[in-house]
Amino acid sequence: MLDNPAALAAKPPHPSALLEQLVEQRTAELSQALAAVEAQKQELESALRQKEEVQSQLKDELKDAQLLHNISAMLVDENSVGELYQKLVDAATLVMRSDFGSMQRFDEETGKLQLIAHRGLDQPAVEFWQWVHAGRATTCGKALQLGQRVVVPDFEVCEFIEGSADLIAFQQAGVRSAQSTPLLTRNGRLVGMITTHWTRVCQPRERDLQLLDIIARQAADLIERNASAEALRLQSQRLIEADRYKDEFLATLAHELRNPLAPIQNGLALLKIGKSEQVPRVLPMMERQLGHMVRLIDDLLDVSRVSRGMITLKRDRVTLKTIVDSAVETSRPMINAAQHKFTVTIPGDNVWLHVDLTRVAQIISNLLNNAAKYTPSGGEIELVAEVTGSTVLVKVSDTGIGIAQTMLPKIFELFTQVDGTAENAQGGLGVGLALAKRLAEMHDGSIEVTSPGDKGGSVFTLSLPVDHAVALDRNPDQHPASHPVGNALRVLIIDDNVDAAETLALVLGVLGHTTSVVVDARKALAAALEFEPDVVFLDLGMPHLNGFDLARQMRGEAALNRTYLAALSGWGSEDDRARSLEAGVDRHLTKPVKLNEVEEMLAQLVQRR
Ligand code: ADP
Image (cartoon, rainbow, N blue to C red; front, side, top):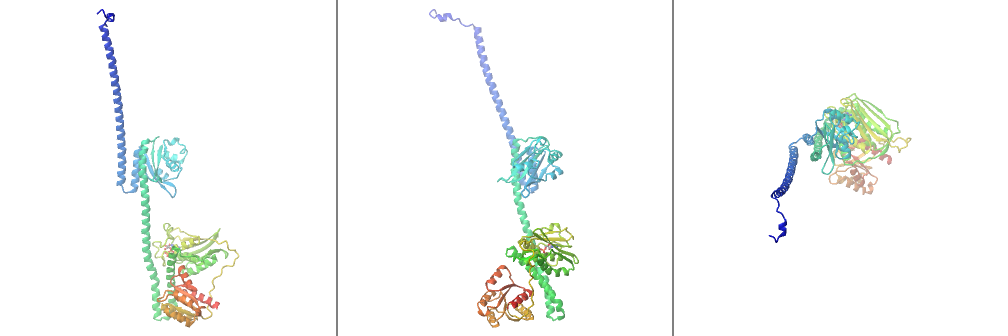
């Protein structure tokens, strides 16, 4: 052992020290282990906490999903749109845990929001916020102005609401805070607003707002879908109405055309059995009835031509007086027949218009005829014309049956007749006012009507622009003079309708002219060359050879180059007239031609000779 001095020097440790050392070491190890366990425990605790959080989040999300699912389910289930709106408002209040809720639709015409459903608002509040415009002191007014969501957590400290009438209304309704979310369609168009209100100060949670956005999308879809459904509904309603009008119209047409036929038929029977003492009574009656029928058919044809843009105005400078005189002349028999008191007041002679005399007189006489028709006999009819600025106003008022407020905007529509007036009507097709309105518009004018309703009479006002281009001292326009026929003319009548041809010949014979009749168009040219007529009345629609071709043949004959060609046709459109002129016809007359028109034409020809 002596050969190891170090071993000799080191004293072996005392056993208690050894033990101490060991204990220390173990303690350190133990505390390390404890710390590790503590760390693990904390880790575990945090993991547990995280798990709980995730679990609760999942629970929340599940709840949200469930809520949305329920909303979708009830939207699918419900049929009434009103109920759907209501359910969406309910869903929004639920999601936002709010006390009130409302939904508005955006009205494009007015640019305002209209309340369509709400929850919890009282009647005064509903009325107060029925319509809201952009920028009004409410969250929805502001959101409409900005085009985005507006949240006001406390109305008492909000700059744009402060001091407003809306704030007072909010206080009265017990509302302290609100949010409004615009309802946008998938392509970003604003269709409405969804709002939730609280009775307390409230700043909504982001998560709730996200859910609200989902509801808002559904609401926007619904409003959009409903708008197209509504448009379709309106259109089909209009079609049904138009169809009804058409049926009514056809029934009325048959009735109205048959009405004058009966007296005409009776009159003819009387004439046939030769009761000559009846002639003075029967003839005017037949004439009146025929005139009525012609007027109906003319109105119908006119309205169809106007609708197809086929009427061109023959504008001329005429005085207001000429127009009114002409209208009054047409309507006076009807006004007198009903024994109405009739007064006309017009300003002096020097009010000039640049219009189609016939058409404007037609408008005014239509108004006068209606006044006479829809006023019980012995009433009062007044025509007052006045100039205000650059407009002439012609007012026709009556003391008649009046027109209900609901019908006022409709009576200018084609085929509209106010129900229940049938017993007052003396015939009509519901065409006159539609025609009058269109003719007035063609003259850059308008017609308006006012009436207090039941038995209160009516006032129709025609407005037309004054023609300032005419000097005020210009001579009043000349009335077409009706000249008596002095000299006899040679008149050839070509018409395959034997009755029409012969009656015309008869009338012209009575007027002192020499007549000849041809009923076969193929023989007409030879007859004309032989007869050498001054005037030919030529029917256009004839078998074998039509009037246009016959006119061309006649124009090819030198012997007939001084002969005046007058076409007689059932058609009088611009097209028909143009075709006649092109075939060499001098004048196009529409059947049934009026005797004074023929007389006037023949008188002019006599003067020209
Ligand atoms: P019609 O007289 O042929 O029925 P209108 O187009 O001229 O057709 O008029 C349409 C409807 O308007 C009439 O059926 C009538 O009900 C109403 N109406 C027109 N004028 C008057 C009036 N002066 N007073 C009361 N009702 C009127």
